[in-house]
Image (cartoon, rainbow, N blue to C red; front, side, top):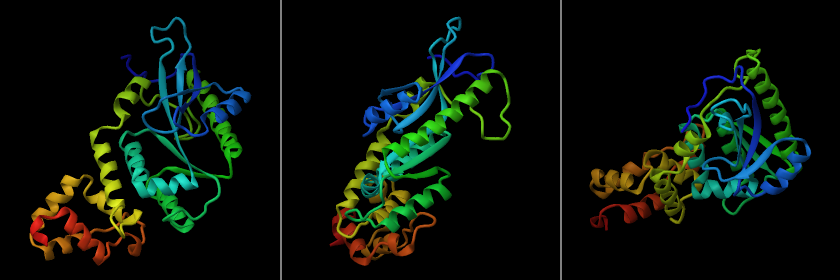
Length: 284
C-alpha cells in the first residue's frame, strides 16, 4: 500500500468524481457529468454515494495513477429514502461512520419533494436535516431533481479542479478550508471505511427496535445512542435488576441534542414492551 502524500505541490494530479455502483442514478448522473467534461467513474464504495479523488498523472512518479481522497464526499437520498433510512437506522449509522473516519467535507444531498412517508412527516425530515447541518457539521443541500443535483456536482467539481491545480502549483488557498489537501489514499479509505462488525450489529439492532409497536425512528435512535448493541441493552437491563428499575432506566433515555422530547421519549407501553423483550424472564 502506497503512503498518502502530504502535499500535491509539484505533482500532476487530476480530479475524478466516483459514483458508487449502488447509487440509484449513477449511470444517468455519469452521462450528464461526462457531457460537462468531468472525469468520472462508477465503482463500489464502502461509504458514501459519491466522492472526489485526485489521481496522480505523473508517469515519472513511482506512485503513478495512485488515487487520494480530497475530503469531499456526498450522501444522496430521495426524500422517501431519507425517511426509510431514519426508520431502519441507516441514517444515524452513516452519519456516525462518516464522522468517525474524518472524511472532511460531507455533503448530504436530499433530492425531490419533501412529502409524508409511511411513518415520518415532512417536518420531521426537515428537523433531522437541520440537526445534521447544525450539530453534525455536514452541508445539507435540497434539490428538486436529478438535473439540479448534477448541476450542483458540476459546480463542486469545478471548484475542486481549480483548487487542485493551485495546490499542484504550490499556491496556498486564500482562505482557510477553501483549498484541497490529501486526506487518505484510496487504499486506506477502503481499509478503514468498510462496514465492520459493530456497524452491522447496530444496524440489525435498529431494525429490531423498529419492529416494536410504538418505537418511532426518534425513539429507536435515542436507544441506539446509549446502547448501540443488543448486548449493551440487555446488560443494562440486567444490571437494573427488578422491573421498576428497568422502567426507570428506559424512562431516562433521551434523544439527540435538538430532538423534540415528545418524539424521543419512550412511552410507558413501549417501556413495558422493551422490558418484556430484553429483560430477564422474571420480569413477567
